[in-house]
Image 1 (cartoon, one colour):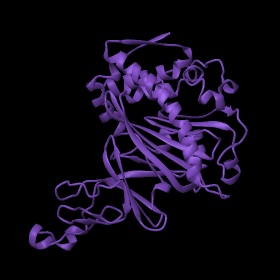
Image 2 (cartoon, rainbow, N blue to C red):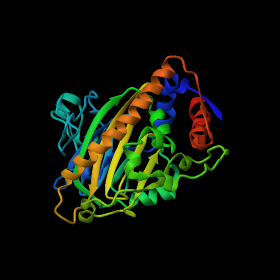
Image 3 (cartoon, rainbow, N blue to C red):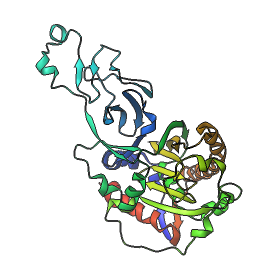
Image 4 (cartoon, one colour):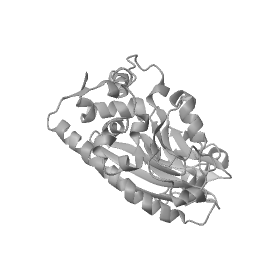
Length: 365
């Protein structure tokens, strides 16, 4: 057993260091291609740990920049989605899809700016990368290569989704009372589904099919790619549902697919590559996390409505999510009531290694 302290799950000083040395340095999930209007130039606004970010799409090109007007810092847009019309409502400064200033009313008379000066002005851009039909951003001035953060298996399996996702999607956000690390440790826990989800998830997925003796790796994490992983965690027990013959499939069509993308994004596909969820557990404070949850489905080849499939899936998913959230919120309460240590077993070795990585690379700085 390995003992890990609980201070990192509720103390503000740990959260500050995560913001400075983790979220601002790593690639984080931003959006999916179906969220953009497919018929015209458009934008998506996200609220991330590094601030509000506008992502634009024009002629299949994506750009990302902070939602702060160059004049006074006022938000340029307020709606989560919209056509590409980036005009600050405060003084009507407008911007191109790449963040460059398009127009400033009374520029020379009121601001002393000539056209040459305006042409050099641009919103602060972020790096953006597309992996399959999913978009990731990085706020660092000198971002690491995304291949350094996500290993080959993660990248190859994400890239299978490119051009595969249907334009129909559903999304919601909910604030939860626990630290973001706790839910990710729960997601890495291969034992808990057998006991926490006995009448829900384990009735549909045979986790025993891939249940193995834990492989113990006591070596310290030395590469960022070791923090994330892709896995096929069990086969579906139930016969294939009718909808599966009417939608495309990105993988084997039978396994429960899991992408655990450090720091805080989980992408499961419960039916082997047709339905996809994005569970983005965005850190808000040491003891609060916002779940931005989106559901996607692949391109249709038949007549079954996507929304009908979403509704049935959501009814099942919310049961599993509630079971997880009740357990993790209960754990957070114990931590805040004085529980100071946890004892982790051999099968939880990856959680131990990640905490030791955070001790060295984040909290010690």
